Image (cartoon, rainbow, N blue to C red):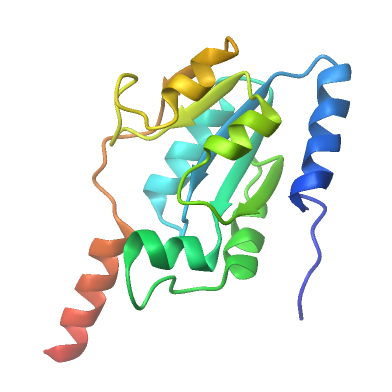
Length: 163
């Protein structure tokens, strides 16, 4: 059974929701990723992003975008299923699926107050950094050290299956 969620938005619907949150005085935080197989590193990243305050939007790579970034055999789960799982997390206020390889266009549309990135980045090497700084937003690095990886988890599972 496909359980509907009011946290998963089409792109234009999310823009309207962001406007409503801003009118209510809310700060907007944007986190992004593939979230192919949810693991503790994802949870800690999103918890750290939510701790920055305000409404947390998770921009999730579409299936085509994941395949472009990660290669063949990925994503492991369809975007709609990944979105439903991430939407179940209490820290997440909204999810939007995007097709581009990065979130620059979405940042231009939403203009989040904060872009939260994981610890595999520094404030200086975030790909979308200049886009965020151009309108006065800020970039924050959150989560625990990058000790968890879906790619590594999948490799371990494949190796176990061969032995």
